[in-house]
Structures are given as C-alpha cells and as structure tokens.
Image 1 (cartoon, rainbow, N blue to C red):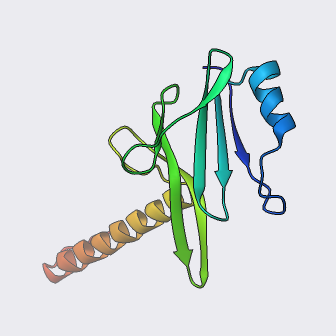
Image 2 (image 1 turned 180 degrees about the horizontal axis):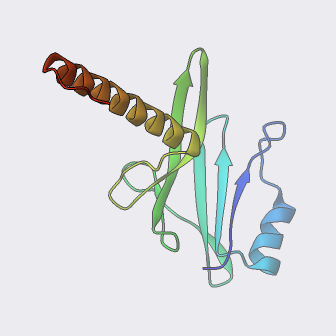
Length: 134
C-alpha cells in the first residue's frame, strides 16, 4: 500500500471537510482514510473499495487492523496530573502497545538506573568479601 491519511476533525467545526473527502477518494484514491475526533475519542477508518470509501468496523477492543502496516490502530486515553486526553496509538498483532519515543527513553532510563543499582550492590558485596571491585 502506498499512501494512507490520518485526518483530525477540527474542533471548531466538528465536521468532515467534504472537499477533502472527494479529493482523497476520487482524485488521489488514498487506500486508507482515517478520521480522528480527539475531543471525544472517536476513530473512523475507511478503505477504498471499488472507488468508494467503505467504513470499517473496529474489533472487540475498539481498534482497527491496518493490513498494509501489520498493526492495529486505536484510541488510547491518557490521564496525567489534571489533564486527560485521547491519543491515537498503535498495537502489534499480539496486542502489545507500541511505545512512543518518549516512553522508550523513560524505559531505557529506568533500565540504566536498575543496572547501576545492581552494580553498586555487587561492588558492596565484593568489598565485604575483601575484594576491590575496581
């Protein structure tokens, strides 16, 4: 699959731009068109079939299988401090959430911190045994 589009609905108008729809469907013939309503957490997925977009149904988790990518696309709600919002997220075929770059950085930071703590404990045990860990 060559191209697909994710479009966010403008909260001011809260409606789909029909000119875009026609352009994507009839002119560019974009195979997958995704529309996301971030204020209410609604996701719509359309596949181009016989020159017309056909709305797809989500699976039991509310996600959509995107065959060309081999991934599920769905809505994820995050609450942090007093902020709450909806985000588009990807899951692999096994249902595992794919981390964002910032999440990968935090995972690596935690892993490095644990490794340092483990090394410090080992060094302390060596010292207790009369062995210089340096």
